[in-house]
Image 1: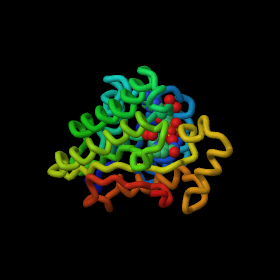
Image 2: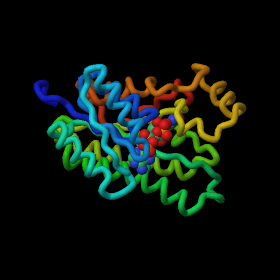
Image 3: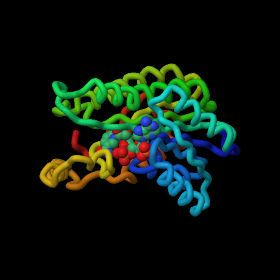
Length: 246
Ligand SMILES: NC(=O)c1ccc[n+]([C@@H]2O[C@H](COP(=O)([O-])OP(=O)(O)OC[C@H]3O[C@@H](n4cnc5c(N)ncnc54)[C@H](OP(=O)(O)O)[C@@H]3O)[C@@H](O)[C@H]2O)c1
């Protein structure tokens, strides 16, 4: 990362939740941000407006990362708006829970195409197009280490992201590009809250050493570190940000 050059980040799934918090935080760090959305165009525009109102730079870019041309179009957007990309945050993800016996082919294929296919294409495009000294940060989940019922396919897609990260870190080290994973525990977003009963939430909060759910900004600070100049010797790591649940 050259000091004189404006650094540029692509954040997938930045219209809400953890991705929106990451986009705002990276912009506060002085990084120009491509704010990706799939369905939430208005929400993404609002994230861009809030970044610009705070003096930062951002553009919204619609793309389905589950489709083959989604990720390349985000690099194109970064090149057109800001001249290139230094940081890719593979944040976008979906979760659909069911016992393995009940998972439909459609549920399986959709989670694989977004959580695994989207991140694979992000890693591939990042390897081809990020500038020297770049940063790739992908999202797994602490459930990979917990083997809980209902999380089989979701956890499998995230475990695959961790495996590819360890490999790509070795492939991109010679170019000074770091490749890491953030694996949050429960964070209070739509993805986590959807379908959870009061009793389930109480049990999850009670099981956390901090006695609360994570918030998007509990995660965005870690991404800021991994995206920034002080993390240059940290690569191939999976960092579980979860208040110490495992
Ligand atoms: N929340 C948690 O407890 C938790 C825990 C561990 C890991 N994670 C991981 O953290 C990441 C962010 O999750 P979140 O909780 O912030 O989720 P969220 O609130 O549901 O937000 C998901 C974001 O991903 C975008 N997205 C979904 N499908 C997409 C697609 N095909 N193409 C492009 N964007 C797409 C959504 O965009 P639109 O709304 O525009 O469609 C939205 O901006 C995910 O990878 C998730 O697996 C979350």
